[in-house]
Length: 180
Image (cartoon, rainbow, N blue to C red; front, side, top):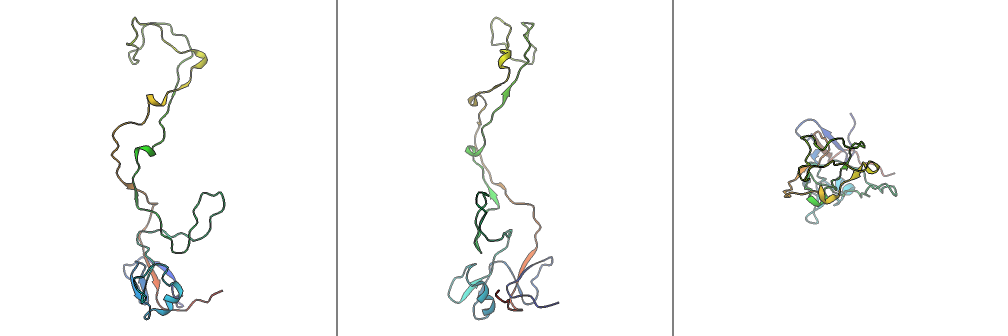
């Protein structure tokens, strides 16, 4: 098997970083000790002084390719080393869509003044033949009659795609990649 390219990232099913690799967990490395890797990735993933640089942190992250989204696609532009997203989200009551229903009824004329016991016509006194105009048998209920109500007690919920946890490791040593 040939040497890996310095900076190459691979995923491993075992729970350790092989010799000449390090976990992609955002750890700080010394620039002088890992100068070849530093010359490739620099401080794009962070640093704390002028003598160190940070490895990418792929813990709990999905990898996306950087680039400019096509116009009108609704997608975001991503630069190399951008980090975005969250593991959980909290939805507020104002983010729920309007709650609407269509009220439908038979277009036949009522034949009795005694409604079925599953309907609430008791507010009519005396009981009467009740029905809608057959010309407008389907109607949308007013939003105030069926709006979203209640006490909002939002709690975070899962916001991740299905996943399989593997260890991402970056090559610290190996073949220096050629620039095109």
